[in-house]
Amino acid sequence: MEYIEGVYEENEVKDINKDPFEEYIKNLAPTRKELGQAWSAAIGLQDVDGLKPSEYLYETAKKNIDGEITIDEADSLIEAYYENKAGRVEHGTEEADKVSTRIARLLSEKAFVFSPTQYIAIHRELFKGIYSHAGMIRDYNITKKEWVLAGDTVSYGSAHNLKETLEYDFSQEKMFRYNGLTMSETIHHLAVFVSDLWQIHVFGEGNTRTTAVFFIKYLRQLGFDVNNDLFSANSWYFRNALVRANYNNIKDNIFETTEYLEKFLRNLLQGEKNELHNREMHVSGRFVNDPINNQVDLNEREQKILDIIKHNPTVTRSEMAENIGCSETTIKRTLQNMTEKKIVKRIGSNKKGEWIIM
Image (tube, rainbow, N blue to C red; front, top):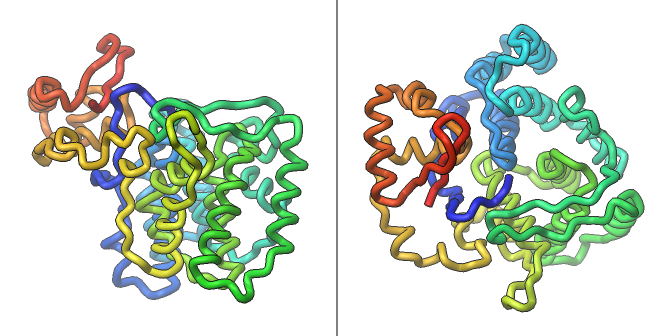
């Protein structure tokens, strides 16, 4: 996910497809509810890379939750669905569907070993057939433009010693003893561990989703009753918190901090109700207590349009109309009003351009 000047990402804006099982799983039996939460987390985690699963994935997931099909059968259905599509799908949807199913499976399994081999195996399982480098340590250096860093990048691990760095971090964590720590000290240590693991960025793509799945399973091994719902609803916040935990810009008086990640973990592990807002993490500080950004009145249709653009900046007016359930003329008129109010802006041509959120 790259930063585009003028784009305002904010996780408290309601996603029209956010947590699709929230009402559905409330009254299910505990085992079915747990499976539903695994699916919610799996789908929610696609948001870290701006991917949106298909309606077919939702339908298949519900069949699995209801016990009509097994998770393996759900996986087979998704595979067959895309074989029949023969490439005629929206960009990223196939990856979102396949990876969601695989995450749901992994989160439903109890088996887990704390080791670099397990970490790499999770990446291989999630992205086999999707990335040619699934389960492989990257052999090139990377940078990633981050919205939360105003376009700057975290310094990721060097390709020359990724394996050694990964093994060292695992060995240090394996030797660490949690006995005698307060819960605050435990949460701080866990925040440092997972942020360091993420910053190595062993994989070229799919690093955050792999780290999240591994971390959830590790927390369970430590005895925590992890509620997957938080990852479902706040996966983008989780990633931005990892970014801020690994970024320094001394010239601008910005220093790496785990405070945002610790807020997330306190909600996750202690059931606290800390508000998690992406805008608070932006290094510019311009989205906090900003009367311009915080006082824009949006009607329901405008809000839905913003949600769609957030996930797919190249979306067409006809696609918006179909998604929302109104005419293309209505969408055109609404977008014109939003452009005049400087809420959104169109850059590029009608065919190859994209929308940005001001």
